[in-house]
Length: 397
Image 1: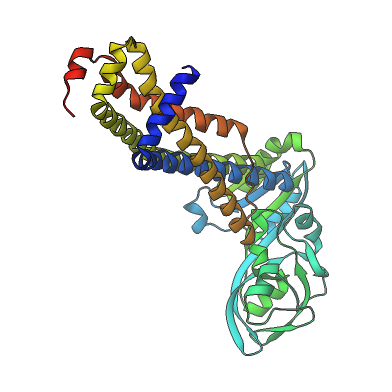
Image 2: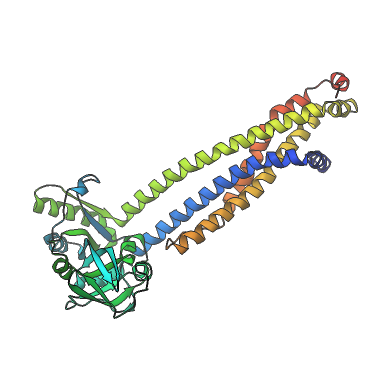
C-alpha cells in the first residue's frame, strides 16, 4: 500500500463520515472491553502476587476439613497449635478465633465481627502483614478487657469515628480501645480491618462460648523445606485426630489457586467481550459492501484507465484496515481509561489493584483490530476487484 493509495482510502472514508463513525463504534467497544478486562485481570494478578510476597513463601495456613464442603462441619482444636509447633521445621504457629456479638457505642448498637488472638504470638501475625498497629499499641497478656479495632471498623461502623481510649460495651463488659490497626498488607488480614481484636481467652469470657481455632498460621524455618513441613503437619494432625480432617496449604499453593481462578474468570469475560468484535467485523463488512455497490462506476473508471485487480483490492482493504486501526487506537485508550478508573475505585475501597501500561497489549490490540478490519473487508474488496470494467460502467446509479 503506497502513500497515494492510503490518501485515497482516507478520502473515501471522509466522504461517508457518519457511516464510518458508526462502523468504528463496534470495533471501539470490542477492543475497549477486551483491553479493560485484560488490564484489570492483570492488575488483580499483580496484586495477588504482591500480597503473597508479603505473606512469605514459608507460610502455611491450616484450615478445618479435608475439603471445602468438609470445612463447614470439621473443627480445629486448641491443642493443634502445640502439635504443629512440635513438628520439625516449624518455627512458630498461632491460632485465629472467630465470633460475633452486639457491641454498643454511645447510643448505637451494631452486630460486629470479633477476632481472638494469642497475644504471645502477635509478632508472627505482624511479620505476615496481617496485624499491625497504626495508632496506640498491641495487646498484652494481661489485657482482658482491652481491644484493638480495625482501621475500617473505626471509621465506618458507628456514626462517630472511634478513637483511642474510648470504650465499647460487649454484653456487660466495657472494652477499652488501646490500638487501631493499619490497613492490612494483604487479603488474609482484611478481616482484621473490619473487626474488634482481643485476647481469645477474654473473647470466650465475654461471649460465653467455647471457641475453636478458625485458622492456624504457621511459619516454616526454611522456605526450601516448606512442602516437607506441610506433609509432616498433615501426618501429625491425622494421627492426633484419628482421621484426615484438615487442609494444610502453603502460600504458594493458595497463590496458584487464586491466579488460576482469576485467569479462568478473565478468559471467560474476554471471550464474551470479544463477541462485540465479531459484531464490529460484521459492521465493517456491511460498510464495505455498501461502498462497493455505491461506487460501481468509480471502480469501472479506475479499471478502464489501467487500475489492476490488485490495486482495487488494496484500496478497499486499506479502507477496511484503516477503520480497524482507528477503532483499535480509540478502543485501547478507552479500555485503559476504564481500567485506570477501576483501579482508582478499587484503591479507594481498600483493594490494591495495580493497573500498568503494557506495550504488548497496545501492539496486540492495534494488530488485532487492523486484522479484523482487513479480514472483514476482504470479501467486499474481492468483489470490487473482480468487477468487469464494461459491466461496472453500465451500472445505473
